[in-house]
Structure formats: C-alpha cells, structure tokens
Length: 460
Image (cartoon, rainbow, N blue to C red):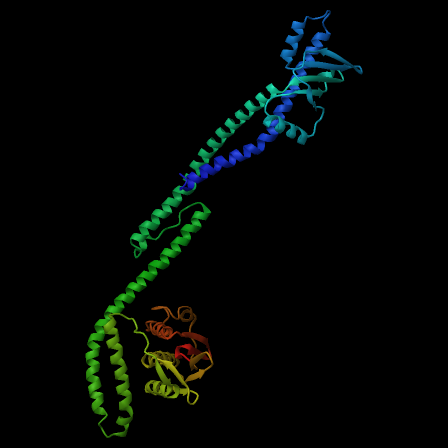
C-alpha cells in the first residue's frame, strides 16, 4: 500500500486528521475539567442548601451521603458577608492548591488541565466559585482529584477513539474519491502509453484528450503532441531509410556508368584542342568526385557520410575550382571568389567541395528563378579561432517557410521541386568537421550563408 498513490493518500489522511485532533484535544480537555469542577460545585451548592433548609440537625451518616453525592469533601458557603462551613468531613491530606473558577483565563485552564492529566495520583484542592442562581456570594469546596484525573483519562480515550473513527471514515471516502478521480485516469493514461509503445508508427494509437480534470487534460494534451511528433519523426526516418536503400541501388549502377565516363574523359585529355585541354581536367575531377561519392554511399549502404579525411587546402585554389565548375551553368549570373593570399584551411576536400558547391548551386537557382542577372560571391576569411567561408548572393531571399525548416529533411527545400536534403547533408558534413553552417542574413537584398571551421582541428 505504501507504494501506491491512493495508499499513501489514505495513510497521510489518517495522520493529518489525528494531528488535527491532537491540536483540538488540549483545549477540549481543559473545557472538560472546567465542566467537571463546575458540576461538582453545583452539586455542593444543592447539598448545602438542603442542609440549611432542614429544621433540625442531620446525622453524620446523612452528611457523609450528601458529600459523597456531591463529590466533594467539604462545603463552605458565604452568604451576607459571612462564611459558614455547611458540610465537612476529614480530609485525606493537606490542600495543595486553590482553583478559582470565577472567570479564569484560558491559558490558566489549559495549563492546569495538562498538569492534572499527566500528573500521576491525586491530591486535595480547594475550588472557589460563584453560587448558581444567586444562592449566595461565594461557595468553596474541597475535593480529591483522583476521580477527576480518571474521568479526564476516560474522556481522552473517548476522544482518541472518536478521532480515529472519523479519520478512518474520512480517509476511506477520500481514498475512493482519489481512486476514482486520479488513480484510474492515471492508470488509463499509462495503459495508453503502453499501447502506443507497442506500435509508435501507428497514428491511430495517438491519445485523444478526454479527461474533464484540467491537470490530467493538460497531461493528455502534452502526451498527444509528443506522440504526434514522435510518430512523424519515425515516419521521416523510415522514409530516409527507404531513400538510403534506393540510393545504394542507384549508386551500384551509377558507379559503372561513371567508370565508363571517366575512361572517356581520360582520352579527352590526349586531344590537342585548347578548349578540350582546359575543360578536360575539370570534367575528370568532377567525375572522380562522383565516383568517390557513389562508392562511399554503396559501401555504407545508406545515406551516411564517412569521417572527414582532413588535409591542408589552399583557399584561393579551392574556391577557384569550385566557382569555375559552377560557372559553367551560371549563364548571366556572375560567380566570384575572394580569399586572402596564402590563406589555407584544414578540411576534407571532397566533402567541403560538396558543401560550398551546394550553397553556390542553391544561390544560382534562386537568382535564375527571378529571370534577372545577379552576383554570387564566395569569400574566405580567418581569425585566431576559426576559418570562415561565406556564400553571398543578390537573390530574392528565402521565404519564411524555408527559413523555419531550413535544415530539416524534406521540409527545408528552398526551391520548387527540391527535396530539402541538400542543406541537411551540407550541415552534417560541416558538423563532421566540428564546425557549423548557419544562415547569417536573408532579405530582399540577398542571402548570406556562413561556414565556420574551428582552428583547433589543426592541432596548432
């Protein structure tokens, strides 16, 4: 029971009710003591008035019976400024204290009651009170507190049993209410989680918020959003896995085609035509990269990249090669590059070529879609902590939807008909170098992407 929510709630309810009863018990036992002493004084007054109204002296036996019925040892009545010992008997001991019942403070009543309750044995006390219904000016009585303490203990036991019964009844009702309003809905929520975990790809198992309790409804709503997002991610991963399998199959056939194209390109290098000699090496380099890419994809069997093979790259030579290759399809778009003389950076040439080439290609396609000429500029720079390569264009800028999902597969496509995989792959390649690819600016004046490569990879 201690491990369940309802069981703990039941036990805590019993404990809290008992604590509340303890706080009530102290003033309650003080009130009981006051009523007990007041009742004894009223009995003593009645016995004394009966004796005063008698026409002749009463026998000692009758006097003892009157004192026993009144529960006191003697009675002193003050009437008309005279004190008179009306009833008396031998005291079992000296009077230990005087208790004044004429408008006593509450804290005094509580103090005396607690002291009497926990003090063993009994003693003789003198009680002073005002006679009821004008039966005199003052009445005093001596009594033994042994019976008072026994009555207080019995009263305390009765209070304890009553409190225990109230706490148990209250706890049972609260237990049933908590079980109905909280435990059962939570169990239903847990059961739905288990059912969803069995087949998270099935959108029919996503929870529908139905609880009328606000907190549980919020929990169901949050769980629904989480399950919906997880189901979407699993479907996307499944789509990526299927795409990887398709790419692996295509790569197998494409490698054979590219091998033939490479052999033909090697023969082109032997031609004496100046144009062929200038273009031939670029075609060979492009085909070599394509062959390496397809072989790597085929080796992994899915769209995963091998760890980057870092090497020292001359910035000017690298940017010139990339820009010249992309300029072949640029048309009226001017592609420029700028790098400080002697600057170099450390990266994987194949992977970085793909990243920069993809950014230039995206910029070229965005400008071409406007039907206007434009400029694309690739700038290299460095600082003490990192190397920076920025691809700037004068295109129309990215639409808001593309900015929100820029690096998400199948959602961040920046042009119609695109898959949205180019920037995702580029970002993964840059992260493999320990760097980051970020969108620095995009508006009507153009777009700027920045590749940051940390210098600590150089080991300097």
